[in-house]
Image 1 (cartoon, rainbow, N blue to C red):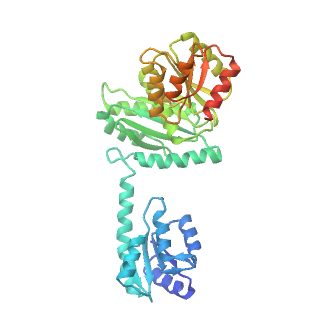
Image 2 (tube, helix red, strand yellow):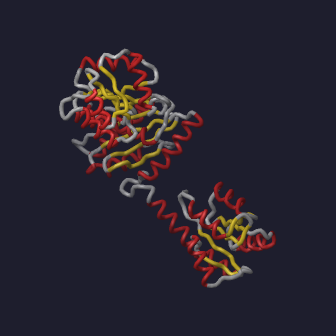
Length: 398
């Protein structure tokens, strides 16, 4: 194990480090709280042995700071005190320490403490490992996927790396066989995760959308063969080549692509994540001419990504939930309940979405109803293009 020893006295640190190394562990040293926290941030040790009083803060405060760290894993903390009585033991436990050692430190007592630490650290590692894989298929778990996507998106943003993410869907009753087949079929360097009862995610690093589509189809066919006769497997694919990489948005795009692939009969459907700063827009209006005119404007205007069009309330709400637009251009009057009802449902499910009301006129009653339902902008159909673009952009910043 890696043991961090925190004590301002160089002789005490050296003696403790010698005992730790004699017992077969690696010893790190820190003279004060600042140095200890810096070492902990760089590489969390398995065990911290800290004096009750260290420069910068009390050992109990240092323990509490360690316990507040959100990083996965567990660090066993032992406090060393000249007053190793019941009061000190209670204070140490309240701060989050696992043990209290008497000062001057006895080598045999330290050895017993490290034996207990090794058992607890190993147990936490097993628990952590179990939470990060799916036992039915050996794929990574949703927790592991969330952690790895956060790292992936940081690399995309910082270094411009390009990844593709394939989401593969199969009936839940066939998921175990399909997942085990996918685990055997992925290439070295790719990573497989179970995202849901019948959904798997494959991360394909440093691949363009075209080559990733070939790999995804190969995986889809392998899963389909393992699922058995009559089973249908679909795959949706998204690339980070656009430059924007938010884990939730990336999964939502892949889910949307998977839905469209299922509707198309299983073929791989791919799309790029939008560029950073691009607004994702949904048009919901039963007036086909109005949708066509707005769609044409938005598709030729830089900075906008039209993610869908809907002609009635239920379709608008369902599409918004699946495609997660930034702005919804929502008609006041639509079949199936009207714009206010759709606005409420969309805002309840997607609090960050912005609603822009579309109306045939400029009725104050319509404006009031839509504003009460959550709209932050209002457009009359047939408004000048410059006004349309201005209202959309200002609504997105609301």
